[in-house]
Image (cartoon, rainbow over all chains, first blue to last red; front, side):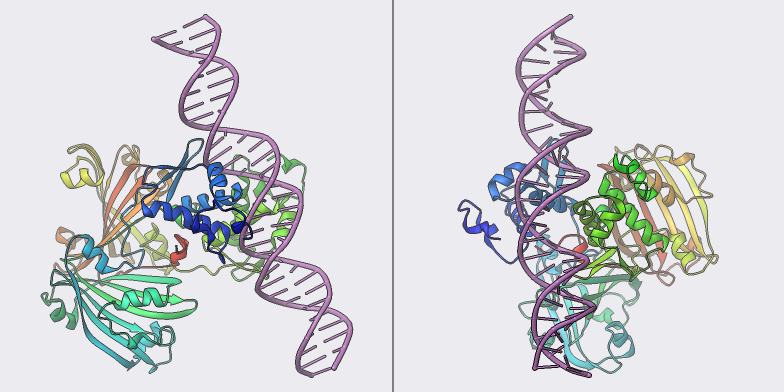
Length: 255
Length: 255
DNA sequence: CTGTTGATGCAGTATATACAGGTATAGACC
DNA sequence: GGTCTATACCTGTATATACTGCATCAACAG
């Protein structure tokens, strides 16, 4: 936009160029809410106030607020105002949550241990899941995640080298594989499948009984049209559950 | 809208009054796509074409197309056109799918059987889940769903009378409880929790072994601020899996 | 004290206008 | 024939303007 140097009073957040204006307005609002300057429940400035504050037309403000409201981050009440929404627990099934964050949020100790890190040839299952020819090279990682030294997740992950060629170069001692992939290859599309299974050979790693059922969360992600990773995440039923909460309207309004 | 009688060529879908214009445009587009007149992959008329067809300003068309595109029903390519999207399998974990539709879509026979339909006093668990005082009256329904006469889901449902007072008046022989609630009390908010459990006393109803693990999908829904229903859905691990696929950007763009 | 009325501010919607940048195609040119 | 270019078309974005309906609050009349 050209006006950024013409309006000295404009907040710094708005100065980043190379993004659509309404996106920068959204980022500005999110920033205020996330920094705590606008707290949950607060009424935020009206559209016309924001016109004055940001030096942007009301329709642009309106679009930013409308989209944030559709995403559930704001609530708008006609004739009253726009409010910051109370954050809701939303987790594992909808987003790719960082298990470490969840564990630390409970005030517990988090550590993980790499069991295997290797390049392998894709079996039929893996090849088909990653849409690769049978026998292609794939990266394979096995890892156990602990909460207070108790295993709570067994991660059995395959990675498409085309999607993340530097994957094996990572040491994964300061950053988990999931964190690395999240930052290096943002997922455009996610598929989650949940099964209830017996852990098979993994029962030793999870330190559970051979016949204790596990949740198996199978996650595939795509970057564009390319499958990036296939992760099988085993959770001992007694130690973990998967949960999410969302507004259907965030996807599409009923029609 | 007032122009409907001035433009005889305007399609009938657009004549329904009492809804926002851009909503009616969305309905018109959806109708074309769903009726098959515009097939997946087809390029639909450009914004300017739709201006002429519907007699509505381009910005209104633009808003309708943009929202349909954000909802994943259309794909827009700058400088090229707008296309109808291939429907993706999206299921159980994200939406409230009708299990009957899923089963019939596989070409199998679907039937269900009511085991219990009663008014009860809420136990501590149920009262807390429905945010009611301990001992309040709640509706209780138990039902088994069959695919080709094999039980695939055990439904143990509690309903808040404040949310659906006529629930017990339904016979549920032509319509399942889930279908009734979907139509009578659209859910503003949904919480899904997945556990891996042993079915307890339900193993007889599901005709499985006592120690066969089950997926337990616990669903709570809200209408506004009022919890409406708590449904515990048991799936024998060997007969069903839960899956979903989605674009994270459908919730909120990264920011 | 109560009920009505009116002013004010806000969200929501709708339209016209404008420009930027991507894309495809026809026709000129080599 | 192959390549370049002008052109038309399409989406995407940004702005100004205007009208509707709702909520709130204060002034006023009974």
